[in-house]
Length: 196
Image 1 (cartoon, one colour):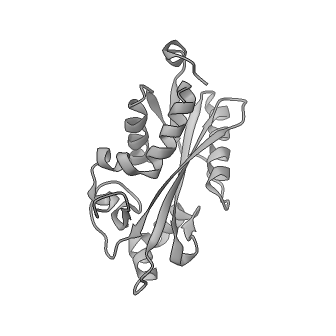
Image 2 (tube, one colour):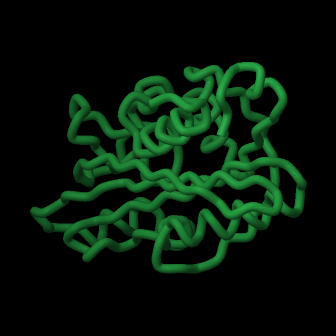
């Protein structure tokens, strides 16, 4: 953990992901804390598991040891109440398979549209065990796809703390005020910088 700005300058942080949107969100959030990150463009190894902590931790450990640098890996999932938490940790695969249209079909005629996004950030230094930080945002699944910003399920998720728009209708800065990813990243940043 970094104690002061001089320590921070001695270390580079890398976000290991193949997802440009995810990197851009994390870069914007962490820059608020004066943390600069570089994009480690890599296809990280992502295991299938029943919880996001296991998935992110495994990927972070592999990436840190493979590239020899401290890394951040973030994994997120959409958990829909009516579907008993589906797609959850399988969100990426489900999105690639059925997309937002498929989720809306599964919820056709369903009144309970409550859902939440969960984000887990795993930080790992080479040869060490990962440390994880989580963040949540609660909301509902919209009746239709709305907006062209963000990625993944953003155009069908309306955060309850928002103004009725989906994440897909918000620009990056707006989404980063409310998102699960921002909340996990803020926890990480405070730990990393020694801020209580």
